[in-house]
Image (cartoon, rainbow, N blue to C red):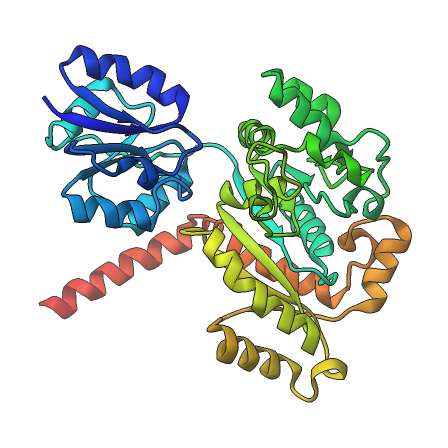
Length: 414
């Protein structure tokens, strides 16, 4: 039997804790969901800390305290991001929140469990398109990526989660009188968000056989309290079950809790932060001019601190010689590598004519300017880095070639 400290979310705690008590374990301390674990652990003598593996819960301070007091950590994962965070921290005793009670009991007792804890996802991926202030072109990039994914035969929903200046709807010529994302969040808050409701409240932008679905953003800035962190998280979970890819636009990384005295008040940037937390990949967009690059490099560090364990791809937009001098691609790459340690960025050439035509027509870049150089660069990025590689068809010639290579290999070995 073990004395344990519990620092879990209420749902997991309600499921797991009674069963552990029935098996003879003793709870010394229960840490509330909104409390800092370290602040309530002083004087604890328990041998095991059963804690959520969320990055804002399982922090470096918690690890340091446990190491200093000889307390084992059993990390409980509730999402793919939690699994990645536990791997980054190199934790060995990790269990999924929906695992059998036997697994919890075994880990608390210090035993090894055989079944894997990593979650296998058969649902959609969340691609978050983010960029610092200054209009680097994140909406254009988000729309183009979503359109190219849809054109490749994937089912896609484009979410406008910008609580400061939503612009996806007018950029695509869609009505925005009833913001779809806000409606989805309200339904999610009441446990009423289903695939049928998502189909109803979303708008479609025609692209080939599979239209691009769009959840438009809020039309009035004062409506941002409708996009709370919990509602956004539930909406993204519902969208994962609906489509292959989710492409989202966000903006500020400022943590409102640092500037608010009310810990339970809604946060204006909660939508962006929650989307980043849920992301499978972040597409970080900057502008290729001295001010744009400076803004991007300053904000890039903050993004990495937030997106722990999440792949971040740098996309620099509007690359042109007029703003950075001769050899603009080389200049931008050198600046990013020298001041940000950023290698292999994706560079998008400046195409004012093409992007202006798209905005004027209220269409995606592929429809308004199919020969756009910016479109070509983003299409290559989508094909080479986002979409899985195409499977090569097996032909009679390829089979003969494979057999011939096998014969040559046998001869060379002999």
